[in-house]
Each structure stands twice: as structure tokens, then as C-alpha cells.
Length: 348
Ligand SMILES: [Zn+2]
Ligand SMILES: [Zn+2]
Image (cartoon, rainbow, N blue to C red; front, side):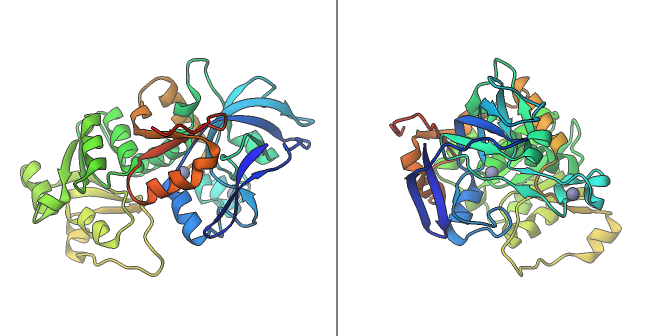
């Protein structure tokens, strides 16, 4: 089979490799849709010791497809099932897993290999994080389950409720999904981005009031103006920039919640106004990754069209063009690129 294989930072190779044979407990999935992700861009640049502990490995981690064979003992799925797979599976036994926070599992098993024609999914993933799809859910849409599950985790941490105003910082695919998920909860969303092609595209989605940070001398001031001076109920950072984390804190109202969804570079820090955190009872929380429950909920929302992320796909390409797709992502010229393993790669 053809696959785009990661050998280390900056080293992706398009190769012919054997189609895996499923061992006991494994499921072999023919990939019908894979999506690029900002994490791929970062990983290609500097590697990822947690998500990719061993190389070489087939790259990519957001995928949907069909089961074509199962190893001995597999009961969760069978040949012919259309499925979406998460990119990790928790151990189910550590203290985090036992307390219902499997996203913080001490032994998360990460799975890569979306940019190939087939993938053999390990037993733990098959048991916990392989979800069957309804007949009407197209593979490209289903492949959003993983990023959407992360987003639902963030919305949960923010305890977003109907009628609240939510500021989302960042106009990348995750910022957009956060906005869509908050709207699905009947919140009003202000999305803060930077002018350019992507922000125009996001504006066109019509899910949120878009605020162009480059056109405002004070983003926080503008947010306060738009909320009658109060600030927002919930602010979510999806940029991973410490200065934006600070803006997120400054933009919430008394009693507000700030969700740090975007991870910042190592050894960075932010300044906090201790008076506000204490006297205004701010809730500051991180949000990381997903759980099997969130993956299932994401699939349900996609299936029920509570979130329809199709328009975040800005390009469609074949496997040989993965490096080009990731370059477009790195330059901010694409939101999500759909990688079709059977596609010839007529980019659009
Ligand atoms: Zn991803
Ligand atoms: Zn665990």
C-alpha cells in the first residue's frame, strides 16, 4: 500500500509498504478520509515524543474508513462496518482513568497512520475508541470526531450554557469548531482572529461575530464594549500564545471562566491579576485531549448535524501531496485539508 511515512523532524517519505495483517484483537481499516491537523505541522517541524514515540511510522491521526478485516477475538466491530477511530486509547486502570478523566491517563496509547491506504488499529483502541458510523455520515465529516471531541472537552470545562456569551480566541480549525460547539449549546460567540483570508472564510461560516484583532487597539476593550462593559461569561484560548491567554483572562466578566485550550511553548508563563481572580471568583482551567465518552458524543453530534464542519475543509489532495498540504497549513493558507487516499490529488 502507499503511505506517507514520518522518519523524524522534516523527514516525510512517500513509500510503498505492506498492508498490515491484523493480529489478535486488531482491526484493519481501509482509510476513506484523513484530515490534516495543526499538530501534524508542529510534529513535522520538531517531532512529538508523546504522540510519536517511535519512528518510522505512518503519519497523520484524524481518519475515518471501513473495517476490512479483524483479528481473532474482536467483537466491537466486524468487516464492512464504517468507523471512525480516535488517535489514542486510555489504559482504563490508572487513577485518572478511574476518576473519569481518561484524557489525563498516565499511559495513553497514541496511534498514528491516517496518511496511508490502510491502518491496523491496536486492541486497546479497537475496544475503547473505535466508533461505528451511521449510514448517512460521510467519512470526511466523521474524520472530525477527534478534533471535535477535544473541543467538546473544552466546552465542558468552560461549563458553557445557553444564553451565555463566549469569546473564542483563534480562527484556526479548532477555534472554528469551538465556536460551532458553543453555538450548538445556544451561546453567543465572539471569535477573535487576525485579518486575512482565513478570517474572511470564518466570517462566511456565519457561526460567530468575528472580531479582527489587527483592527482594534484593545481587543479586551472591544470585547467589553460588545458586552455592555461586563466582559464575556466564558473565554477560550485556541492560539497557544501566552499573551492571548492573558487577554482571555482580561476579557471575562466577574464570575467568568477561562479555558486554556491551546497549549503554549515550553517554559512560558503569564501574569495574573490576583485581585480579580480572588474577588471576582474567576475559574481558570486547562483543557486537554479527549475521552472515549467525548469521542462518542462528537460522533453523535456530527451524525445529528448539531455541528456541520464540512466548510472547514478548504482543500482536497491525494497521499503524495501531504507535504504540500502541511505547508499550506503552516502558512495559514488552509484550514483543513482532506487527504483522500484514493485521490489523484487534484488540489482545489
Ligand atoms: Zn488533530
Ligand atoms: Zn489510564
